[in-house]
Image (cartoon, rainbow, N blue to C red; front, side):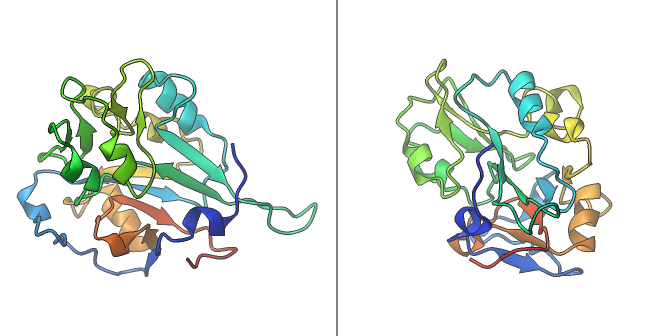
Length: 227
């Protein structure tokens, strides 16, 4: 787990803080109406609950058979805050944002990179991917990689073809010992993920790019949260 400062992994992201009770926009800048989708899956990472145990990373690797040397999910640890023995750390989830306006999909020359219109999940058709790495280069979140075995683009897909296909929660959510991760349908006002976003101050990263990310963060509340 790599130590880095909050400024390092949030700098340039233009983090948007949404205060409690703020209504999340239902219309993407590209004109996509979320109401047209049956489901819009999203995730919330609660930085106040995350202890940096990396159980989520291990579960993701095991369930999705992710080889060593690459990762669909990383938990980034901040530099220590405070003085011994009262030292604290902040933990940030780095993974695919499942953007509603996904640049990786727009640049793909073969149609391999796509958005599942029923769920909003951004995924890759491995049989169509030629490994050109356009999607890797254009992703503003730097979360795509070329799978060392398949030689195709890969990333988090919310366990779409593993746990979700079996009617379960994503592996990272199931494995978290502190319930720091909440997953569900943002189109369902009664869902746990909607309730979590409504009840807490949250932010999304690089929203100024118009990507409309579907990964939300509840800020740690200590240290610097400005870009």
